[in-house]
Image 1 (cartoon, rainbow, N blue to C red):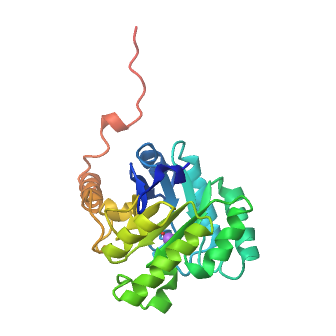
Image 2 (image 1 turned 45 degrees about the vertical axis):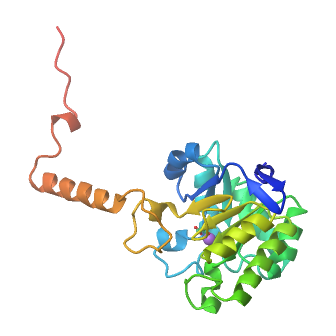
Image 3 (image 1 turned 120 degrees about the vertical axis):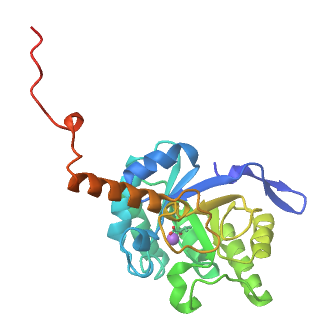
Length: 270
Ligand code: KIV
Ligand code: NA
């Protein structure tokens, strides 16, 4: 199991081998990422990445189910987790169970992820006791952007740092099998990774986390503007633009298609 990778040592917990997680929203991308990852996350970041929405707030259960099912169809090796969208779980543990079970039935995913700390701990407990593995998400929680007032790093004051630590601990004790810690001052993430039993998956967090996650499109260089914590491992936007430019040039110059790409009667062999 994922949790078994984290050992209890003197003064806290430690992970030997960091967990590798990336987001995926489509079948083909899942196929390509799957052999290299431990977990694939169908993040509600698909709101911005796939649908051009201004935030994750408008993302629906239907979107998450459709993309979740596609990603499950493209994965064999990685654990697939699907984000619960804003408004689908916060009302009550009953509401969360109804919608999480629907996500699991419609997609075949192995786990769901939901945002929130202490306030969501009873819900995490309710789901895990009823057979739904849960990934927590604390620190910068994008569904709470209208309360947080933006996407800046969290935990710049000691009080806020303590709250984030408390959130992670509460969600871990409630049974989350791992926790995403996003957009926090490095020291907070390092402390949480040591103190909390559940593996901590960092994004804009710390190299000391028990794993890392990035939004795949950011990591591939598909976006013009990305947060500071994104490392671009490729520049796909430039490569796609160049391919489209060359295609347009060849169509307009009648140099595509050629004989290689056209159907013609076979020459007779006799
Ligand atoms: O929606 C998402 O992609 C996420 C990850 C960034 C953790 O929640
Ligand atoms: Na998310």
